[in-house]
Length: 328
Image (tube, rainbow, N blue to C red; front, side, top):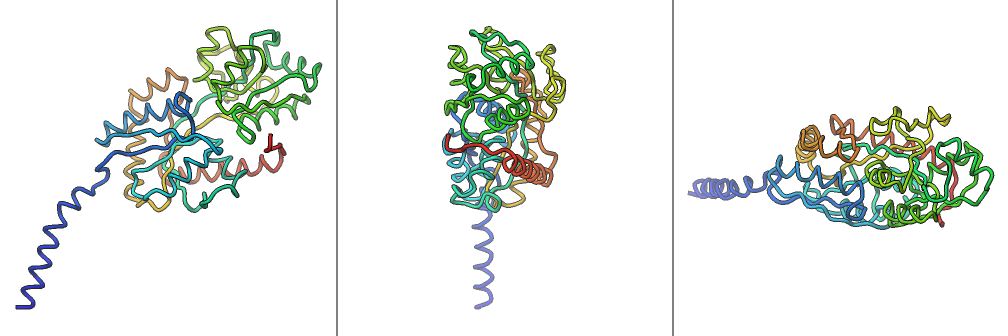
């Protein structure tokens, strides 16, 4: 009789748990993606394009929440502390998810290396060295450098913040070219750059093509050089850094998708496969192309880990070699 009671209880557990197990199949509710930038930024745009395709693939809503501030630490920490079930993710870029963990490691209340795992590299956004067209005659990199040498400490360049990759890139170029400029850190990012460059208050800035293209067409900005390995199809007359005599200078902005490190492997694999499918879709490729964005997901979770490790190692080397004032 006791055995029968135990058997009956076991059967009841199986029957009662089956619906719950079915409901728990990932994903069974909306997925939230935290973004360390404001709405309208290039990273925000490519995330929302991908999100719409993920919604169709996974059958669940994909919600983007903008959490700017603190070099990306706010968004990263909120994601890393979330329940590791695949429903809270983060999209970041080279500044927030490769440079911040190196420069501002002590500002984290988590261990970035232990608590964060990459799901995939998502896309690359070609970067141009832009110049204002207002009272600024240089039209090439060589002309700009010659102009700057005649005015040491007089020209200003924009960056989204001390320690960001545009800040480093401009300091590296300055050292290589033997020029001296004044950094102006604008937390509003490219929209703020465009305003100040349109007024002629700032002369140059590294900007991604997606953000700067409308201003180039409007005649507000002019591209001097691209950081890509080859010339861009939309700007065939703009040389690469290597062609201009400065190989290896400049960063291509990338975006990546991240999750809490304790997320179950099966969930991470589901997300990775969905991201690859989304980025390979014609809808996303066409939408990215309009923004001059190149889709390119990591082929596997292991490849994503290797990629991020390499990015962080690269910036560890750069930040040791190039000393900048982070209090600016």
